[in-house]
Length: 365
Image 1 (tube, rainbow, N blue to C red):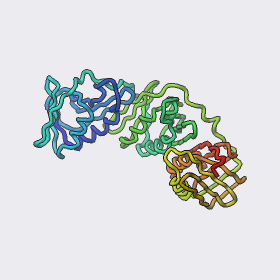
Image 2 (cartoon, one colour):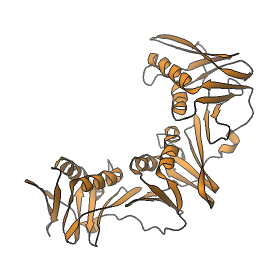
Image 3 (spheres, one colour):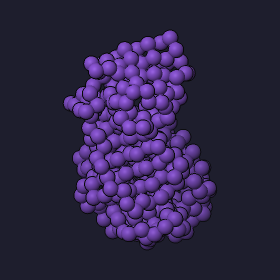
Image 4 (cartoon, rainbow, N blue to C red):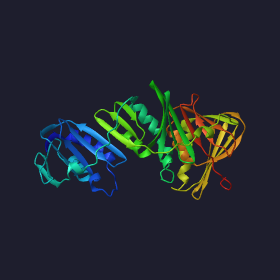
């Protein structure tokens, strides 16, 4: 195989597919990026068996063929070469020569035949969505997935499609994040659970209009010259409807930025990993926030508009910060039932809903 392409095109392609190279694996071939020039296009592929990414780069094929190169070494070499044309040439013994101007690297490759190709997915009935919308939906929900595998379903997000509405849900046992968006067209009802890792990596490389395809076991993201294929998480997602309620005893409208900044300041007194609650005292026209730790105490008041009863309630400050950070509205509406029931932060049309469970704060005031 012998190909030539501009450094900028190669760096971009390598950076895209690298998202699917596993950090740990018992299969050395999966630590490689496959360069496939067996047809009239140059295709780069990486696959960790759960997530696979394939992208096409511009370039010239002097001699058809394919080679699998160690992703880390190949990526490092390509990034540090001069900004010019790069020539990649592999021989029968799998030794690969990478040349750019006066720089020459000779590295050993692996047979492309041994590489795990992406599964073939029948692509029918695409769901179209803009990259901006999809990135925003992921950003506004991904923080509340669980980061351990004790319950696999909690490490993913529910994509619940019904008509022209796509609802994305994540939860970790302490909070729930829900985001609803309107699609350009109407689709058959479908529910799938997409791994959080897939969504995090995909959101870094999305561009243009994105087409989503769903099968029983996979989701495909297709955009520009890139295809991402991910396995789905099997199992029935939690029935969150029974956890949601429109009843409330206290409703607070507050300036979102003021509340976020206040809680952010309060966490200056809390060590990483320390579970000190922030105590919220809701009274007429005023919300008092307090935190107490070994480092000291903090007390601040914010003006509010209140409906209903006074309330004293405690929360993990990080959970409030995570939700408030991704809300773009100037004002936030918070709904409370009592000191032991969840707080709901949502807008009027419920395009977003954040449920946060309170914490016990006896002795923390």
